[in-house]
Length: 97
Picture (spheres, rainbow, N blue to C red):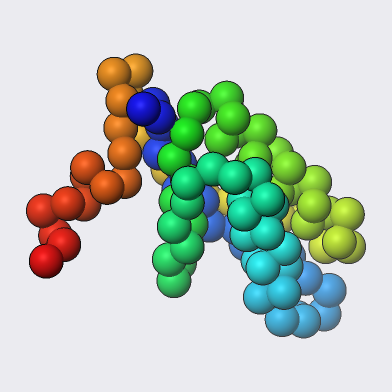
């Protein structure tokens, strides 16, 4: 079982006010390619895995965005870590029908 949930919202700084959504899509593609369990939500994406692995994915997201040409990116991150295990499903099961 995974020991960490990490939710991330990337806020790319774009040139001249251009649309940031294509850059957010690039960040989500990094998560998708990683193979970790994840859930895309309207304002953030939550990943489930091991802490080191998830932090590495965050780094790869930032690299991908700067390589795509944005001048800078801010990420807001929330981390829930439990060495005994944690999962999105377990934390939200009582809210599902």
